[in-house]
Image (cartoon, rainbow, N blue to C red; front, side):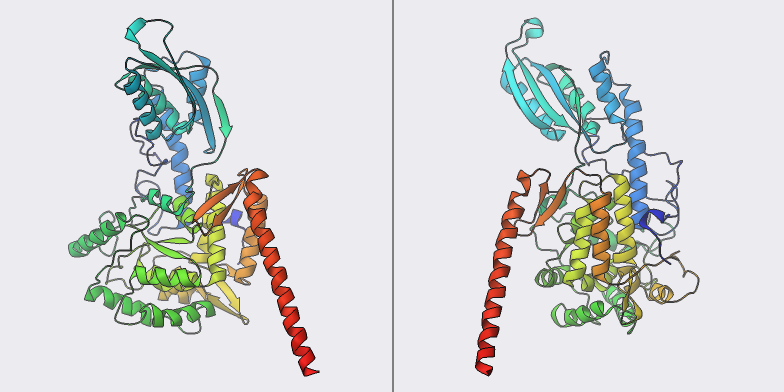
Length: 518
């Protein structure tokens, strides 16, 4: 069945969810509006299974509700909000557009010049404010024993603006603070990582579908399994960019679970791309029966074949952070193994799903490019656009089917790592146990899917800029002015020159061969 991304409805979105909002504090938004409650049935997340699409919709809704709650709570602050400027500051917090930023001009009074300046800079750093201008002056009045006044102009996210002002008013070493001049609300983009090291800031989410939280989880009553999961998750949680991926010494039971899934890979049903690279990885990465490959070995192999790499994840991350990792050709990868009582199905991604389902596909340069372009499109995108990109990812990278020589083959990781769902996706039978997946998308080819994605990105994204990935520095370059395209233009000139030289050399070589033959 063929459907538009806009037409896909994910079951279980509840419009009557009450979000858990932490009490407003200066640290209330340190995690970039991270979801602070479990993705559970009790909180409105329908069904036993998680999906990236459902996550994106759930996160969008909770953030909107959180903003509303924040605005209501902010009214209780003793801010003496009497003028139009401060009222506008509060109003900006309730906007539905996550892309807004506010430019503030604040006059701060201090009794100690050096201590006060230090506190101002520390608070700006804490609230992720961007300083544009700072000047000092002696106070016009000597009330309150004020030694110095500082006038600062800064830009800050609406979610942090109120906390920034409150911190400046109440911090030790500062006497007070007040808004001066106008408040400018500017259209910018939500935060996104500009360098691969900034993926360290990804938010791990609390999910109900973990053995400590969900009574229906196969490992709920297995205390030993729960302790094992936590130990492996803690190893991954402490990982930072640049480190070697920690090795996990898998137990006999975990290897036996791997063997069950690995031996059930069905010939003639997987994509030729998957089959090709799986065979190579058996030789180079230790794939096969009797051993679970280590992420470090697989990551090094992927770097050589497609430029992709793996990053250990303690569990699920938000949909936005997950997609943004793909922009750097990085895949967030779990290291724990599903419960041995349920080898054919796991309610959340495990290392079997990642290594058997995803990694052979990421080794293919064309598929890697397609995955990265989804990630690049997510950078700076609105919540509604993240939902659409998550839908695209779900029905391609996770559960995609494609045509090969007239036959339908599976390339989605959710199919390749689940015996039952793989059979179901290629049949016309009702949904299998656990997952209710009755729609699959069949791509003509990876190149066709990539062209369709590019067409959608060029016409549908609302961000006022485009981005590109610089592999030499592992960073993102934002292009929003003619001047910012200079580097790309220079690279294109060099590439055109190289291409022209190659054509000339090939033409000369062919001509010499022809003359010798004659």
